[in-house]
Length: 277
Image (tube, rainbow, N blue to C red; front, side, top):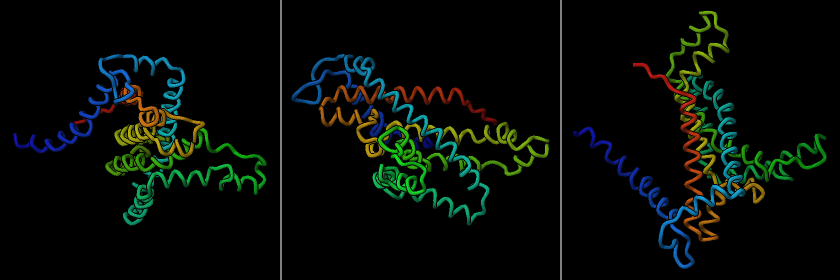
């Protein structure tokens, strides 16, 4: 019985900071709007119907999910080689590399996102460089579109992909790759059929972390996308704060959360893990 007491603090934290707030949001979303208070009396499903049938909101939801998926794929493609290289480096080099990976997390997300506006802006570093070397005479559309948002989000959330994969690779026996090569398998086949399945727990963790953080990001899409690319978190904030429509904003947030959770579940079904005893 005493061993179950160890999980009591974690359960309390989850109840207070996750379960109860979600229940409150669901409760608010089922009420009509009111002019003089956060929500009116009675219950209704009109908020959910409006979110699911409004073409503008549906497009925003699809755009938000698309940005999250592309960002997840980009961080996976960039992060796996870095994690592999870190895991097979010497102890001293590994410590330096981990510090480099973690260093961006010490800087606020606002500062990092604003830094990308300096790089990707119409008169930013990349556009000036492209004009100086004669690559183009016009402005490269690197900001105020989904491309710029994906680039910035990839940089911001790349450590969350590298670290879980790095931990999984570090737990593997280094002789596995050599064993595959000694059996006549090419490096590609050894990686695809031997290493990747064993690193899937880290890949799953990294993909879920990056996807959830990307679809819920607010600061980076707002700074990089401006008002030309609006994601659902931006709309939710505007609905809650500017329009003061708490029930409608709560319904928007819950629909986005539900669709994101469904995508995560599908991802887990498509990438099952086989645990051995």
